[in-house]
Length: 562
Image (cartoon, rainbow, N blue to C red; front, side, top):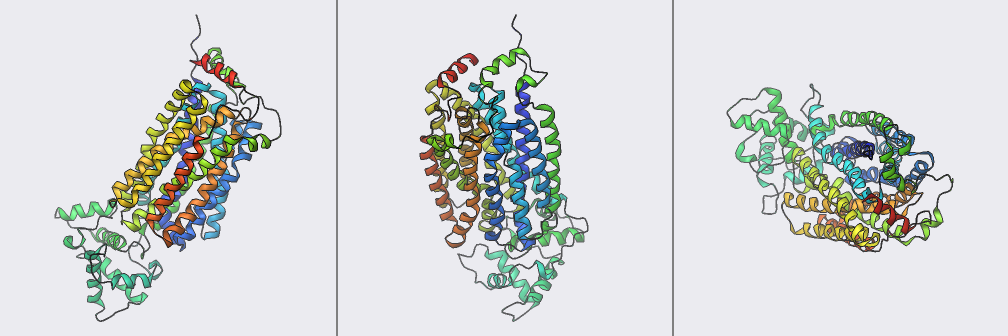
């Protein structure tokens, strides 16, 4: 009787998923906290974009060397080191006190994370049969999307939870960000084009009561005038604020209490009034949660220690080295183990990479994808706050939704690419789902300028995220198909260019937003996805970069696993 294969390979994939969860939590907690980081350090959106960009630049440069190190010295040790290194530098981001320090910490953090997914791809190649690589890659990448989806919700809750108990709700002069802009807003006439006439007009009237006949407020007058309103238990008037939707969960709960006839204690109504002012003047006042973003980053960084230990105790460089893997499981995956496990050469296969058209097409596609994709995890937060005045809690939900919808895309994309590969071969089994997904994602961006409601735009971004995640298993499986003994290097090459696109994205999109507007930003992202679709169509996974693995051997291996 044939022994039933053990299931260790699935625990290995689960450990890689957990690594992806932690990686994206550490990466995108920074993005969720960015309004408060910018405000505390006195940075504009354009200046902050350099701190975002430099992470992806160094992350991109580190891809191929990190992938080669894992191919050469084994993924178990290297992946454990990568997790610990990035966790240390994720914590140093929370110590930054200037733009220079922030950029240095983010650059080191990017180098630390660079080897994670190339190494994970090599593990999938060593531990999974070819016919299951798409699904396995989808699950590993899904871990990242889970982390990206939960971090906005966790960050919003933790920003509120870590607010110091003795935090003062009164403003000091340093927390007034833009006196000239505030004066312009408070003196604007109420018209149809004024996005928030009622509560801004109410605020103007209340300041006029304190400083009659003043046409331009000084910094001292603005500070004392707003503090007077914060201390006023009667500041909140329902009819004046009924159109103001951008309130966080705490403030919304206090309004429910007031509407139920309850009286608020002094600190409660002062905090509510501070939130009302911040929501009315989001670009002019420093947010209350500036006081709590640093401990949130420290907490998330500490997760890496647990993740590194789990990877170390679960993973082995090769299935044969794991004492819990039985002979049946070895037989199931051993036909594929030579696809990347016996490399003893020290050189990088640079010539083979540079001669491979498909590798270049993959790189171009990933470069363009990341220019558009980064909008969701970088500028989307600012877009919701500045353009639609969405509250911390609601915008955290809106940022999380695209990443949650991506779960389905990641899993279904792995199943589809594996199925198509069996039906129509490697050439189109990888290229077709990849290319079509990019075209649909482009249409989502082109649609956004005609959508006025932030929730409709959120769902357009959700469909875009579904399509991007649907294509990821095809990208990863392509690298495993053509990589031979250099899976980590091939994936690292594509990821390198992808992250060069990610490095360009924050600066490019912030520039377009500043000088042209949000609609142009959406259009540029759509154009990038169209280019990505064209490049993806010319990817050919049936032609390995070296002669280490032949097409005949690949097909034979797939038949053995069916």
